[in-house]
Length: 333
Image (tube, rainbow, N blue to C red; front, top):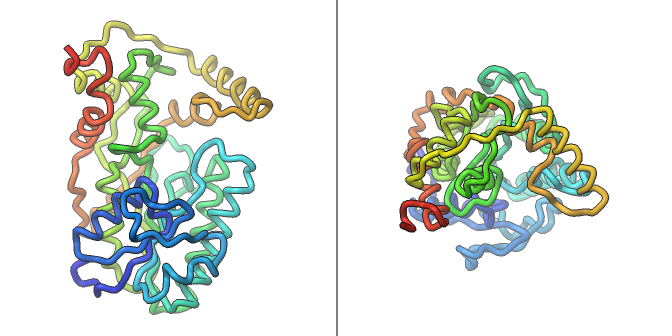
């Protein structure tokens, strides 16, 4: 579908980040002219960087000028952002400012990376229809931002809005929650919280980038899709995969009761608040780890999207790239 897109510039807001860098590289491969709009300079594509802040429409003028498509990946997304008002400033007010700047620039197509965090926790795979019960400020503000973009699209029937809701994203070079989990497992110091039968939906960065490229081909109207790689794995299977990729055998199986882990997470939250220190353990992270977080991605597949990477293949590639030289792996022997 993307081959039918005219070669006008594409503004990638938040393009200096993990997903944005992979996306910009893919767009260049396909012959497009991406521009990176970001507060931070791009270390991979410095010549394509335009300094801007999504919270201020006037700073977006240069990166949006003459662009045919805006892709907004910019967001406050970490679990420990303080003050909490920053989620609203970037995710909600940022959406409002991007819409204003897009209208001023005459842009008709906008692609927004939202998040499955808009759904919250549920015991069943959730599709694009919800329910919507976000459990933290990140999910709440992403849902509010979606409403702002919907209003923008509904004001003009010739406008095209694509909302992509990725599940947790991993890949080579990422330093987010999946990396931290894989690192703990690879270190040999990992302790399972609960029985480990809870299932997790994940998405590989290469597939997310390809999904966003695919989204460029949608026409006028509002299009909403989950972005999920499957089949989902449970935590026990994920641990086994890491050990297998590193050529290790599981010599022990340490487990922490769920109640004890949550209590410890709340304690770390209190300490973090008073010391202004960030810890890898928090009540939210424990809950996210132990809950079923499954999402249905069949609607996107029905549009003809074909993810180029299989989930286990992508996990194995990431594990080998990040941890193959850690002490105790087969590669070190």
